[in-house]
Image (tube, rainbow, N blue to C red; front, side, top):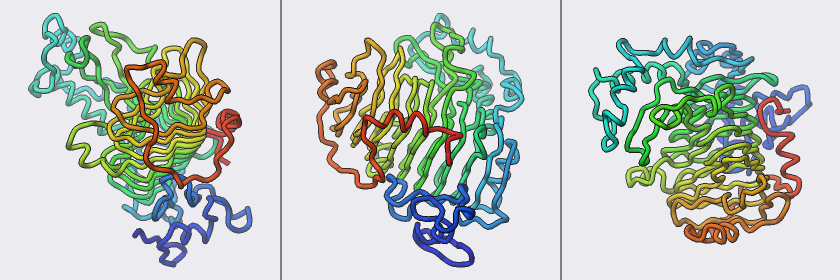
Length: 437
């Protein structure tokens, strides 16, 4: 069990350390003047992140481990300070993690024009990918260039850390936050503009037409436990897919996900966030393979509540293996909408008390997408203000992908469950960065 040192005392439970300053629901325990939002903890029963030891982040940080940062180097230095000692990092303003330019990451000898000429399907063909290309090939030089960008834009978050934006305009442009192999992390009140991969890889074997595949999610929870993502905003910012060029007849895709939860990660709560204007948004479990199943099976327990999913194409989220509870969220679709919930291998999704706003001509059967035959629970959901049985309407509209009801478990880690008719108003006015009070 994790032990916190709080005001000179060893505290073992979620309520112990924070209760000296905060109540268990994340509000001030004593006089309001003592309230420090940076020391708030995830409340008792507030989703899977509250399970067991709960999520307190850096609430117990001493003064020496409380930092305010305004640039990328300063942020990375603050993360590294003190190892796993509790720390609070306040982010002021928008921090640019993109680097000077894509050209600054290019390995010697890399040339994109040469890359295109070498791997043009008319020359290379469509029956083999590029993975075996040597280091001095155009693909090898692309890999080296991508590695340079990788080292720059990724920031690794240690255990027992709270990262919180100050005010209404705090966040990151082009950063990839890595919450990898650690426990007890809080990320709040931050805007994330998706990283733009300077060096996507061409794969002629990915679909019949081939595809450009990119790296870098805005945030990744990789093999970590007890994580709370709250009041954050994820977007493509100034670089939506509509601005990207095409090569070989396919969009030159430079975005990956907004939030991925993978590799045996567990006990995550995502609340009052905004995910908008993106394609492949949230992935829970990243493969059907036997090796991945051995790591993910029995893990990937995640709660989503009071989030706004706006103008997305798909994966809100796509789920493999995990017990995922999704309630009181608002989904706003646009033309080109693919689906919201992806039902993947051995997933156990519970989707209840959610509101969906779909454009004219878009059937409610698209809300669910069956990738594997995994039963789910989908009760008390409204589509355009009308109570809708999501499973029944999906099966009627997509009879070739029949879904079965009954996820096989009942969520108990919930705080207030709002009436569905109120969800859109509550979420639209309270979710996202700059709205944390």
